[in-house]
Each structure stands twice: as C-alpha cells, then as structure tokens.
Image (tube, rainbow, N blue to C red):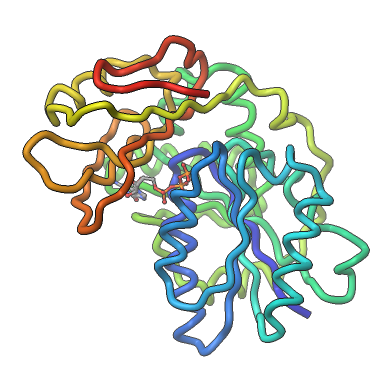
Length: 304
Ligand SMILES: Nc1nc2c(ncn2[C@@H]2O[C@H](COP(=O)(O)OP(=O)(O)OP(=O)(O)O)[C@@H](O)[C@H]2O)c(=O)[nH]1
C-alpha cells in the first residue's frame, strides 16, 4: 500500500513550503515520493517549484481545485501516476487553499485504489498571523478557514516568526478549542520532521466527517495580470499594499525597472516577497481574492 498524505491550508499559508521540505526528507530516507497538486487558476507556479526537485513524479490539476474538477479527473491523475511509476512509496497531495479538505479527500477515496492507497490523513497548515486577523475575512472564507482546521489530523501553526510568543500562545489555544484531537505544532516555513507526521498519523486513523461548507460556493476568483512595461518596485509595492484585504494572494513574475529578469513576486496577507530570477520568466502575475473586477495595475492588462 502507498501512503497518501493530504496537505491542506488557506492560500499562502505555507503548503508548498511543507511539500518541498517533506520531499527532501523522504528522499533522504531513500523513499520515492510522488506529488499530486492542484492550482487555483491557470498557472502552475507551485508545480514549477516542485519540478525543480529532481525526479519527483508530479501530476497537476490545473484550472480548478481537486473538489471542483470532479473526482474522475483526480482518479485519472492518480491512476496515471501509479501506472507511470511503479516504485512510489508515498503520495503527497497539495490541495488548493480554496478547497475543503474533506471534499478533496473524498475525491481520492475511489474503489479503484482501495487496495493500493492508504490515506493517512490531513495536515493543515494554518497561517498564524492570518488566524489572528480572521475577523477581517468574509464569512464564507472564514468558514472555510475554520473547516480546514477542524478537519485536520495535525495542525501546523505556521509563520511563528511573525508573531510574539504570547500571540502564538493565543493562536495555539484558539486552534485547540476548534480541534482538540489534532496536535498543534508551531512552525516557521512549515518546517517539521516528517517522521513526526508519519508517527502521529499512523497512530490515529481518525474518522473523517462529512463536509459542511463547500469550496464551490466561495466567491473567490482569480485574475491574470500581464505587464506591458517594467514597473517601479516601490510604487508597485505601494499599490499592492493599498489593495483591500479581500485580495488574498498574488504570485508570479513582475518586471522591475532597471533589473534584467522579472522578479518572482509573492504576496500573502499584507506581506510581499521579491526574489531575483536568473532566467527570463514571462512577466505575469496571478491574483486570488474576492471582488477582483476592475483590478488592474497601470502597466498591466488583466484577464480572467
Ligand atoms: N514569514 C514567513 N513567511 C512564510 C512562512 N512560511 C511560508 N512563508 C511565505 O509565505 C508565502 C506562501 O508560502 P507557500 O509555501 O507558497 O504557501 P502555499 O500555502 O503553498 O500558497 P498557495 O499555493 O497560494 O496556496 C511565501 O512567500 C513563503 O515564503 C513562515 O513561516 N514565515
């Protein structure tokens, strides 16, 4: 049987960081992990990051999340992974931040895999800073955030570096009030020993409840910005920070004036992150949020 782990968590909480860190540890143990990831929106930025890891079989479900693309598609992807690679030991599934973890899990519970896959459980990465500011989220999004925590078998209270010790203590207490059966681990960059996750999940094969909130009903949408000319880095950052709180996530490549290649740009919950790129990437940016109509930067074009 192949162990399957599901990584859940809100947009920008640190799931990809957990995935990369886990792949590294599994490979160090001599195991062969495979990855199924889905992206909300049409651009596979996260899967680009994972492709950088040598020889990790990867399937992506583009343009939608595991829950909305339908279980047949997920089944087909999983089947493809298993047929093309007969030496997989572990499958890691990263769900989109907009997916209800139980629906995503439903999709991989298929009779096709009953004797092949052993679903070990759900690890939810919670952005601790966002947790403290959760009252600013719209009710539907907040409900999804809570559901992802409620259904977790292990919770990572991530981004501990951004909070004080007493804030972290508050977050941990509040998370445990919501889900008192999952261990809560405070992490930075979602760094955790995978052996710990393995141990906890092999001990507790929790029963997973039925979904309450559906990821399909959310008013989240995505937008793709393409740039017509390079931007002034400070001005662009000011623009991003002036956007409403309902813009949850941005990632992509932004051409910056005076710099040769577009920078890798990430935005999550009020914080921006620029990283130089040594290759020429197409300058385009995915924006995820609510109420994106009319959102455009002065040197860019927007499309759905
Ligand atoms: N300060 C801080 N930043 C973090 C931490 N973990 C992740 N980040 C940053 O948060 C951003 C999002 O991290 P990812 O690992 O891509 O999160 P994700 O959940 O995969 O994001 P989506 O793919 O949008 O759902 C990146 O800029 C990370 O560098 C952390 O513990 N502390």
